[in-house]
Length: 375
Ligand SMILES: [Zn+2]
Image 1 (cartoon, protein in one colour):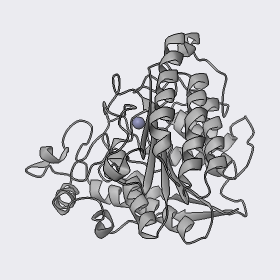
Image 2 (tube, rainbow, N blue to C red):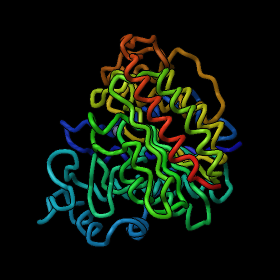
Image 3 (tube, rainbow, N blue to C red):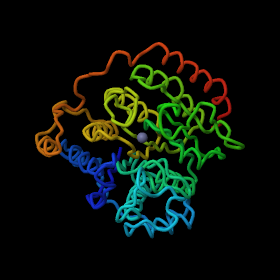
Image 4 (spheres, rainbow, N blue to C red):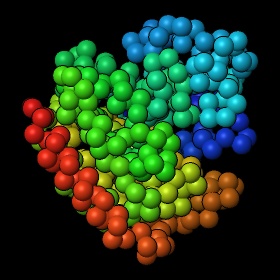
């Protein structure tokens, strides 16, 4: 089996700003840890240096007027009607090079797609990708261009059936919306319920429309859901959906903001639970385009995506973090010395109400959604 890792240090030329929760340095830190474990020197691994996408690659999904605004915003100044397009102080700030940043991330996703669809290998990982909130003509939730949608559209143009699995704590609303009326793409999003978290969508009754009815699936979890309930719900629903749909390629958004110590969300997953989900996705995906996503505790991001990359390559890692990484991490105030660490999750993570709520959601999906899906 061959795998590809797509990365460049050029990501570090960009910065959302000193108070913004999305810190691009997390990508560098992840790369450093993966490299320190020797996971880029395996015979089966191809390292691919990120190449910027062209503007016309973005135009396959985004409107031309929105791309024009992003191009103007690239100078670092607010264009006249930027607010209409979701840009401005707050979630989606204007910073120098923001269009170049978006084209780089999108380029890496297209490289991952090409690696898999051209038959060079089975799995490709773009840790910078997964910017799942961007809409056709609007920036949203730290996302300017929707690289998962653009990547999936390239797969469709190559005649592939695509299942999209999104395990970020936030609902994958931009991807769901893009494919809401088609049965060519099955979108499955597992996330914290929209009652308590941005973007406020992703309820189990959002199942697609018209030809796409049944091809959008949502598992909204109540706050404080832990590994046990999460893994149970995943197992009840996702394998059956994938078997029914029979995708050629699985695209995943692997956000790591579901952890109990993530500063922005309220789910209570552990890195061990995350690893188990990754192993199941590997079993289920005939070919796999893996994208990054959220994650606002940068030590979690580096360790979880290193574990994810190890799972993709079928490698078991030492629990002790490599010395060269620890030096780098210590400079950023990171103290963890173990890959998975000790479990410190509060016991109330596994409460009875959450279990009952997810039994209801799982039942609804099995009764209403699953029978509509055809392979
Ligand atoms: Zn997120």
